Image (cartoon, rainbow, N blue to C red; front, side, top):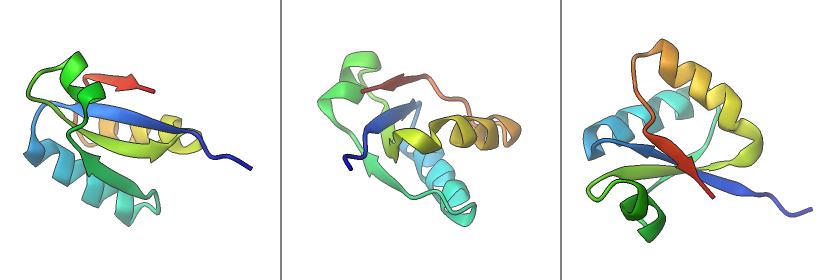
Length: 74
């Protein structure tokens, strides 16, 4: 089985690190990145690589915590 990944784009390294810790505490593994996909959407943004099947739950958790997601890329 092939697991698909998405990248959630956040506005800063600070928000990306906060989001990563928060999601990790909720059992959702992420990986911090500053990939070309993130830079394409927002030049100085950082992102979290996350399994596709966790994306909806992760968005809910971050939204409730006041962490804004700028976008999601493949």
